[in-house]
Length: 170
Image (cartoon, rainbow, N blue to C red; front, side, top):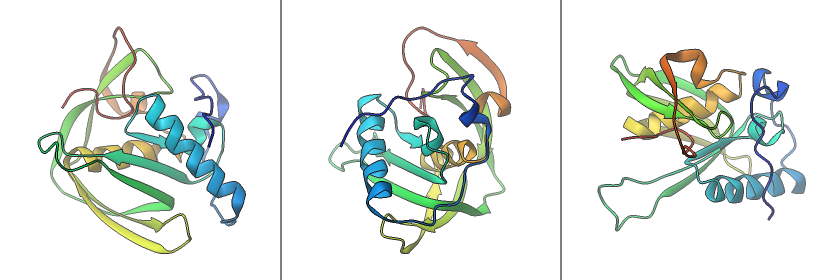
């Protein structure tokens, strides 16, 4: 595994629609492992392949419920993900992005989503996510279509220090 450079604005790859993954060979597996290591080192709770200059429909997310420290964070790898259901309820939350360091913004997103995609072995998976996990999936999947949180934010501000990927404050 190796750390990859996280690209920042104005890198063109951040504004392009990513390509569907069709090859599940060793190069993809290395990319996934590198993305997990890079996300953890940043530190962040999610990372999309375009953020490491790989224009592929691939995200990694690692998130645990802060209220129960006995349960370790769960790691998700999603290839060619799609949101198949959005809840009707939404909420404004503060987001930041490793590709836009030093900025945060208030973004309204649905409270729940159902996501389907493939795992790293190419097998179908389906995840029902609520709350911050749902927000993280939506944030990361936006990257696959060239959409950044600043495009959806009601308000954006500069702050000191590095932000985590999706949830700046909970």
